[in-house]
Length: 392
Ligand SMILES: Nc1ncnc2c1ncn2[C@@H]1O[C@H](COP(=O)(O)OP(=O)(O)OP(=O)(O)O)[C@@H](O)[C@H]1O
Ligand SMILES: [Mg+2]
Image (cartoon, rainbow, N blue to C red; front, side, top):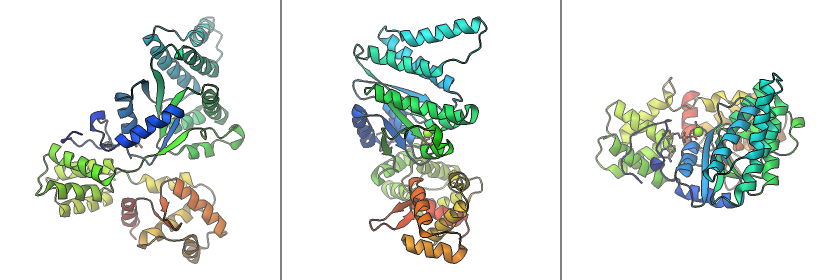
């Protein structure tokens, strides 16, 4: 890995500068030999950086394509994007996506003849993939589409074209995966797809739309990799220090090994002309965590609660659970949590509704479980911020 790096929190980083993800990347390539992959992780943890590195340095035999789907608003736009990528890929081998191109040509003729029917996006998407698969055996490389921010796209389509169309896009992709076992796609997203699915009326979703994909969890960096990144930033930003190993470890520890926060610490030390000594790092982090401008973009952990848990008193109960877990230095079992929340609020109907809610909070990366099944904050740093933010 490079030994020097400039801080760039939140910006595009050169794939060469993606620290500590090689093992995970190899695991994803291994999985792709067999099936499609769904990358699920907390915001800002480094999903896009991982897939951009995979696209820049593909495993032998693969032809990866990166597409940011965040800006896509309709099923038609999506089908056209996929068509373009596939056509470009096939043209590398002097092939043409014949039947898909025919659909577009027919449509252009209809538009010229002022017949304004919508583009048959489903047909275009299906034919595009059929064309790809028909030529597959003759191409030397396998195409894999890396689709960033799929849940955003689905949510955008839901908002602009309605639930049935959003559901139909997911269903079509699933049928394509089933009909063409060699087809490969990787989905990533910073809002959980399960929340988007929950907002699509169950009646519109015929089957579980992604349960054939292999779910990969992205965690913060391993401590040694986080320290390596911190050391590279100390050098790159020319931060003063006495012992680089001690400073790097302090930064990695204070950032909970999240690369985004490590970059933020480096840039904060640089801006305030502070040395990268453990004491200064710790004080800077406390200031950043209480900064009203929220440079670490943590407020979403609080503001999204109302959106993620809209039913009845759920969002209030979630606040109580997190407050309780933030204030004690030990994990809580379900019975203890039930007692704590209900002794203060009487909001919980019964212990089963608490179990259900805890399951969702676990899936949404707020909580993790100990080996004995008790609950605690998933990330110590978020717990620290929660306490400060809520003035507990
Ligand atoms: N492996 C890494 N090595 C070095 N820096 C990293 C790494 N991963 C992430 N970063 C830093 O964290 C920032 C956020 O990373 P990235 O955009 O990949 O996260 P994300 O999970 O896609 O975020 P979002 O949820 O906003 O889409 C990057 O701009 C970069 O500064
Ligand atoms: Mg991203």
